[in-house]
Amino acid sequence: MLCRIFTVFLIPFFLNSLFSQETEENQVGVGIGTSTLAPGSAFQIESTTGAMVQPRMTSSEMNAIPTPLDGAFIFNTTENAWYIHKEGSWQTFVRVQTPSIILNRGQTNNAIIITDTTNITPFPLNQDNTLVSDIDFYQATENNGEIRILRSGTYLISAGFSTTNLPPGSLTYRLEVSLNNTTSSIITNGEVNLPGSDYWGTSGNILLILQTNDLINIGYILKGASASTRTAAFFNIGVSKL
Image: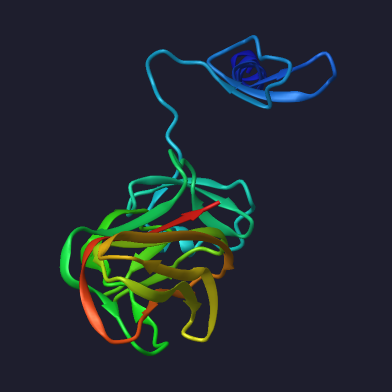
């Protein structure tokens, strides 16, 4: 009988010593592998032989968690990345750089289209011309000049193109971005008048607030007295989430 009383007494004492410590402010923190919990620690682990493993699950399992609190933290085995629940949605935890997408195309014959109308020509860039893309934020489509936004936020959109042999004479130009094939915003515009055929290019930037699944389309107008084509030195689109 004495042995049983002694055992029952020891178990809660042992667990209390292993997992918690009371600070001077009478706040209880949780410590594992330590008997000297730091005053500012609510949970402290000390080990030189093992690692802490967070819950591991697929994207489907993560998205099926009912009403997760902001600050919830898991390792997503589908994406092979840490995810944190923030502002009501799951987001990748570590970003080594600003989430960006870059589409680029170098020298291409007959890629610059000069028209005698004000019709918009899409940038000849699609998913095949992607140099860099954060797939959690962007999807370049098979359509020229089109990018799907996968996360809501504020985005800096840059676009530019150039040619090695713009013809002489007066031409007007405009770069613009359309949103969901409805509203359009001018990136840059102006007029150029060269005395002879020469190298020329233009570029610009614009800030837009975009929503999940918005489609942006980058296009240009290069208008002269008559229609023709020119060799492109480059076409470039860059989008970054701020």
